[in-house]
Length: 471
Image (cartoon, rainbow, N blue to C red; front, top):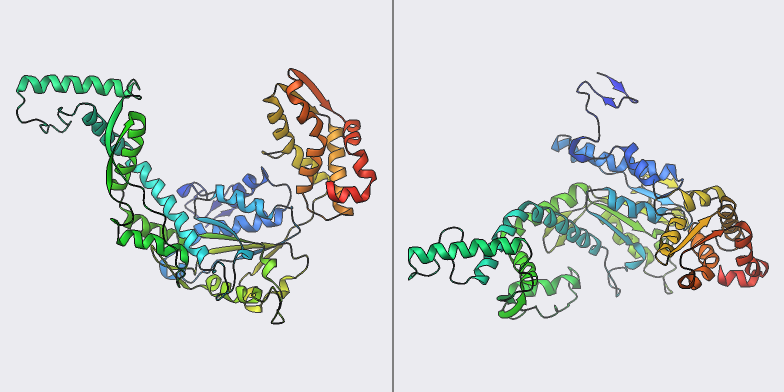
């Protein structure tokens, strides 16, 4: 048995983690997050380990895998330091069903608003869409071939299908051969895109009426779809003839062909399994529902939301339109600023369901400089690209970037600390005049210096009261 961390050899089979099933290793996950988020190594590491553990668990025997509960994470830190951005980037990295939702959107059962089970139903819908897209890719070539034949039937109504079925019983052998030659000629033209504007007549289904919404134990968003399935004739499903161009007809026929070839029952089964085994929910703004109520006032349902969240997080069965879903192994990553409240203000049972706590640190001037220049979606890159569309070339000197970062840090210290979001307001004020005059500055190169930054912000920085409103 060999364990070699640097060589990534874990056991005698020398399996390089990350190659199997296209999964990313923790190091690769952190490296991807580093492209968009500066600092916060502890949070990135915790998230990377949690994601990797999902992969490890799937390789265990079923009886053991069922006993391993996910280690839910609670990220604590001020606004604008990367909590939500981590969730956004995770959604793009992972092949698992992923849902980001704000805890403040929920209300206690009995109050007007969304119940907590709706997030599981939303996650299942996302998983169904994911699996459906995968199935569409699998049957795409077959569907396109079928659509091509249907389009040829529309273009040449009396022709013969590629399978050899006769379209017209009275046609002689010679006429049949001529039709086949014509059909093949049309096929070549169709593939070359020469017939895209030709008008054909096809049958299409009428659009269904908007669904009825009733409040039930399963949530008001479910019942409308169920009624449409039970009574398709009343809520759409009828067909009518339309005259459309070939390019539009292809899309309509492709959609019908996909519905015909894809087994939605199988899609639903796979989606539910994927949600149960590898689903991830990012629960933002958990601090907004923290706190102990006195039994009255506008926030009376906050502790009730916590009590409703508890069974979902610790494991329960939720009814969805696709079937029953167990939440025992869904990974929950919660986040909150906790400025007013503290994690200890959560009910004890809920605290225990987030065993891993990570504190994100406030951003410094050095972090701001890196955010402006190093990340894939750096603000400076964005402004350069935007103004380049007007023919204006923008260049920032290193001193100007440092000045912008220093001003952002100073304002965060003296006013409310909103983290990296402060850079957006500062940058917008610095670039305001150039953005306004850009159409008149075509084919010019403009250099942003420290002096220019100070000039643009001088009046606001001097007036503390004005700074609170502008920056």
